[in-house]
Length: 47
Length: 214
Image (cartoon, rainbow over all chains, first blue to last red; front, side, top):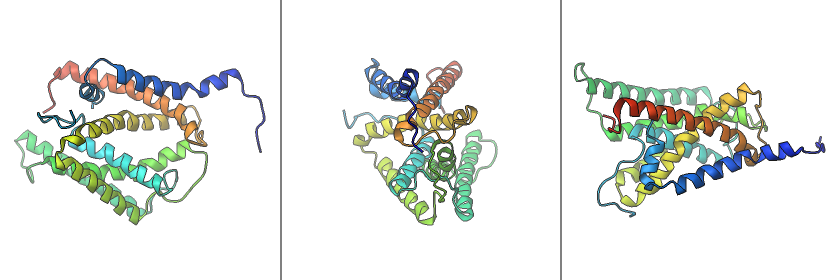
């Protein structure tokens, strides 16, 4: 059955939380002022 | 830049490299075959094979540990190739065992086919062999692609495991109807993974500083 209930403004906002998180994460990583390999080593440093 | 004059280490050591890349490449292969979202465990003989795969890595790890101790006898001298190869076997096993659990938690569609059958294990082994050859080639052109893939796979795999726990904890199983629906729960899992990796990194730094692990 199709759900035609109106979507609240909060639900619309929450739906974008994940995509925005990943965009911020990737852009933040790219622009972090360190050499790429050092940043990649940093991600795995604790493993 | 693409082929550094000085050899550089990859961000992950050989065994971890095999596990993480083995897991994701096997799962990607299963997606390509239309089985990536299935919720059924493999048949018993495949499960047994996968458990043996993990056991082989365990034996190699114990042997390497005994070798490092230099006090107790060991079977053979550990090699990076064996670490990598047994890591790949475990990565394939993780895909066969962990992926149905993730799919069960995540997807609304109820595809109960087993995630792996014999031919899929063979395919996964062939893909692992290609990765192995790429790594063994030592060609500098692979340094950055491999470094990026391995580094991305670390928070992603840990994030996927976190996501399963979070979905279960908040009773949100079967939340995703499509890929767009995966992003929110995965983001929560990756967020927790970054905190966990940060804590582990701090602990390592507190003990060893920036010293390379022995």
